[in-house]
Every structure is written in C-alpha cells, then in structure tokens.
Length: 470
Image 1 (cartoon, rainbow, N blue to C red):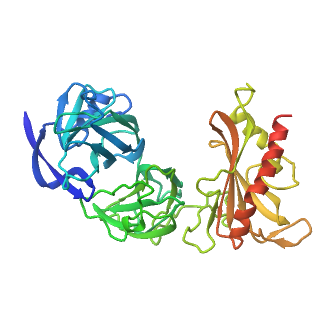
Image 2: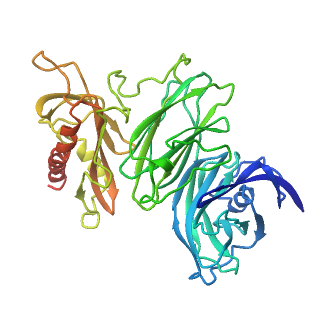
C-alpha cells in the first residue's frame, strides 16, 4: 500500500541534500504516525521504520558490498549528536568509476533497510549529504546508522557507520538555571533549546580553534544566523568540508564571535544550533547559550559559589580573549598507569589531588582543597586570589580568579590575570590516568598567561605525581 508524503530535494555544488519539504510529491511507503515513544537503544525496527528518508523501505538487511573497488566512500563522519524533531545531516565524499545511483541506509539491528535514490546535479560531484528526519516521539538514547552507496551498474561500496546520540532539548530558562557549555569536534552537533516563557534577546557565543568550523542557527523554521556570509535558505542543510578545504567563504572559521537572536515565545519557543566540524583535521570548538535578556523576572542565578564576581563564560571576540592549550597541543601529565599499578584509578588520583591545594594551583598552601575555598596563588606575584569549585561528577577543580580581595596583611589584592579560570581534570587517556589543565579568560596579560602556562602547570603536575606514587 502506498501513500504520498511531501519531500524537498535541495542541491549544492558538490553536495546533494535529501530532505522533507512541501515542494515535490513522491511515493513512499505508508506509515501511520506512531504515538508511543520509541527507545532508539532497544527498538531498532520501530526506529528504522519511523525515520524520515526520501526513498523506499525494503525488507531484509542492506545488500553486501559488491565490487567495492569500483565505488568507495572516502570521507565520512563517525558520530553525531542531535535532539529529536530535527534532521540528522549525514555528509560524505565518494569515489566511483560509474555514475552514483543511490544509497542504502539502515539502523543497526533492524530487519529492513532504506533504498534512497541519488540524482546529482553535476555528475562530476563527489560529495553529498542525506538528511534523515528524527521524529519528535523518538526518545533520548544511542543507536548506529549503517549505510553504503551503489552505482548504475549495481556495484556496492563497503558499509560505513555513524554513532548517533539523541539528547534532550535543553529547558532551563525561567527557573534560575543556566545552560552548560557545549564542546565538540569533527562531525555534526545539533542542539535545541527551549528558551522559556519570556521574550528578549538570546546571546550565543562561540569559539572555533585553529581548524575551521561552521555554525548555523535556526529559529521559527528559518535560518537566522551563521558564521557564513550568506544564510542558508529554508530547505537547505549546512554543507561540510574537509579541514584542508574549509574557508570563511563557506562559513568555516577559526575564531570567536557571538550572535544576538531576538526571541518571542509567541512565535516559537525553540532555537536550534547546528555546528559542522570540518573533517579529517582534529578540529575542536565550543559554544555558550544564554537565556533571553530583557523580560525574565527570574534570570539565571550565578551558580559558582554564590559569588557574583566569579566569571564562568568569556566573550571569544574580546581583544584579550585567550584559551590554552592551543588546538593540537597538550597540557597534561601521566600520573599513573593501571597496567603497572592496579591501584591506579581516576577516583584515587582525584582524591589525592584534593588532599593539598598545591596540587590544583601554584601555591605554597598545602592544606586540603575545599569547595569554594579562597586560595592565594603565585602567578608572577605571590598574592593572586582564586576561589576553587570542585566538580565531583567530572573529577575536576576549577580555579576562578578574584579581584579586590583583602590579604592576611590587610591589603586589597586582585589576580593579575583576572578575569579568568583554570580547570584541572583527572581523566583516563589512552589507558593511563592523567591530569589535564585548561585555561580561559580575558585578562590583560593574555600572552604572558599562555606563554608560561606549560611551565607553571607542569611543576604542579609533578608535585601531584610524586605525592601519589610515593
């Protein structure tokens, strides 16, 4: 039994996007809307059937590779994070001796697969993206999408897979909370935010490291902001680029900036942010989202030790903005190896780090670390005040610089690098327990801070390492 649903086909130079829209009628398998929620982690068949894809749903698993030397997927992404009621854009590049004809898609564990036709605007194109609609009734969870492409002679490429995580829409405005920072790398991230009941201006700031990345923002069914000089049109999807090819002309930037989006809950409550990390370059990025300013009688409270002076978010476009280590660099030290020391764990090292304040900062203070404790650290001078916030969930401690604090001699002191913060995290990397350090701020001595960071924190690391392994 067949029925008609509406789709749109939007083409780019070198990029084919398949997506749903009101412009063109095609025949697809009929599926009644499912009212019950679907758990993507445990219901692969149900999920597979309810994906919104331009194509036919066919019985059985997708065909195996056939003459894969004739057609190959050369570049793909391995992971994506998305909220439901959005499109997952699946980009990749390919190499084929014959004209590309279609793509097979299936959710791992499903008993059916999708067969979607591909019609390139330019036969010479060697990259495109498929848009996979994720309905609103798909719950939070993880799943794997596998896909392969085939040509007009029915040669089939080797299968590729992408790990997909569906996350909840963020909803914190109006109840005194703030949104956490979002960090990412290559691949695709789509985050949706419910901005609450009060109108105002939503400020979104971002920072792309050395490798270039792209951000696009969607509100009320339209693209309203972008790092690209030209906004996408309604049915278009963000393009993807290899890091070596990405340029500001395509919207891929290596800098910081911000957007201000007028928000009215009577028009729409949700803002979606799409970040496209360039591929094959080890890229990194982050962004911060603030609740609407101007009409909220209960704005987000300061959540850092109830101290209005502590600054957790910094403007990447500020002239003194700095962050370390730089992309591609490391500022970490191996503390122990579980392969040679069975007692070596992340929790044991983190607990050791909390035993003395000189393990979280360059200070002569060797008293235990306490949540929201004031500590005087040595950064060029011995009288730089910081307040330390412990995050037991992430095994980290963040030191926030302070200003106008009275020292033990009655003198008012300010941290030379204020405003800024440094986070010390204990984590498992390549099978070993390490302590890593990340700093950020807009203090006046940005170049000094960055230059001396490795020397300063390496010494602190070595003190912790010696203490733990004694």
